Image (cartoon, rainbow, N blue to C red):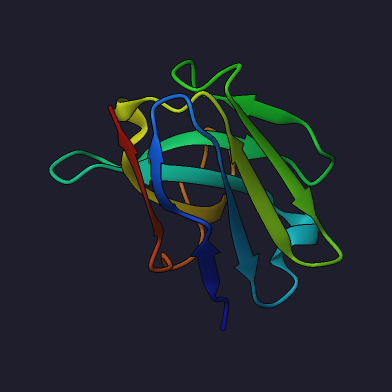
Length: 119
């Protein structure tokens, strides 16, 4: 059974930084593209960044230049370094595997990690 466990969220001021981590059970990382998503209450979950098994990355325009996604296949962990945070980045952040532009997500969602950016 695949489990996704996100951590690293918290309260930070505008302009601050956080590093999120997502640990996955099993061996899904080696074969799959991994993504970070976020959701604000009342809105749809959105994909903010993904990284392929080969290390290629893609970012939503709203986070480009501020967020960096990376992965460590030996630890089955994907990271999201978030810099220059803005209040509009406040959300619950989740990770999952995906097939870009084909399958939005592959596994059951974890509990997520809450990021709150104060103005």
